[in-house]
Image 1 (cartoon, rainbow, N blue to C red):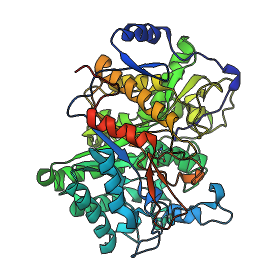
Image 2: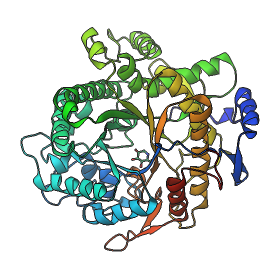
Image 3: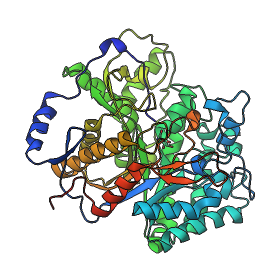
Image 4: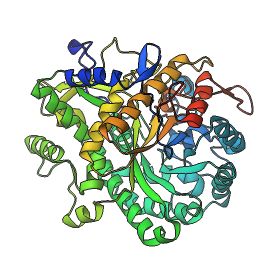
Length: 513
Ligand code: NOJ
């Protein structure tokens, strides 16, 4: 899910590359071979230790929403509203039924040849009240069984602690807008590290903080559907970052020496391409990158929000009459504490938007777009998927990785999501093509730009509950029959293709070593 600022169709253009990257592409043609759908693919094998995996998330696949002592979370509440905010009144009550079908999930992971499986833990399944007064044994058992089954099949678990399904009890107290979330998240993380940490080496604290905060607490188009642009979203970001840092430090102090795992966070957005080569557009692109990725990556690398973000929000807050900036400040102690709280950074890559400075907005406007003073859009003619926000722009993946690599020098990255939506067909050539073109650009970023990317995750293992879009947009490598009681999984063409990639680590017929 990408974030959107205002749309401005009048800037529509068919340019898809800056001239420097066009020259680079010409040069690369000498190195690349293999071709599908008319595009040259990088023909170098991925490094032997490069990991290929697939991902899902608890609410999107598990079902069993009220079984075995699970508590209620914000998505249970959102999807049961009348009228429902979700397409076709869909819910995750049963979803892919992974709570009961996890062995089948591991079997298809095996068919794909996945090196790892990225899944998330349902907070309210483990701590039904949201607090740590009572640990739900059945919930813990479910994840232990899943991890055991993965291990038995030589598949590494990569576990996200929080992928959007906040216990409703915590939302009733303000959710991420209330700083009590910091210690409650740490309590939850501690239970997870204690229960599963012996078998889990890769941890992620939060999936897509900007979706949690901007889409959940500003645009109100994800649960908890709070409409507080420019205020609630920054409170959310501030508490979320401090929760991340505290969970990271807690892992250091209580678990790292015994468990020796890695803890990171998954950031996302689009690649925000300057709409022209003008210095204004280049600056607008940089500003939006800082308001989106920088808001969450800058604090863990450098201890604080990016300067441009602090400056813009403070200036506009003052003009609006606030005596303090709407963007909360980290104390000097927090800055020190926050710096370096990552072992790796996850990045979810989907799409690209064009950016230019916003003209003529009123000072009363609130939110990331007005604060960044930019506007972004996607040209109509860009290749579509079934999701309105997801246009197919492979070159943006490389530019995004270049930007991350140069802004967070020395960081190791893993692509924690990359995927394409359609109507669920088995002959999913467009998905296959999306994956191979994006992977090719990712391979380029590793090879030519020196970005340290050590793994790639396809979103998703199977069709699942796509949040407010319900089951109307399908991202799976496997098709799920949502009418069959056991939610039969059937491989799509892309699954067979991906199985070949995980085996050969190569995108073309014959790879150069
Ligand atoms: C982002 C989210 O992490 C995931 O839950 C969602 O289904 C995909 N991207 C596709 O929108």
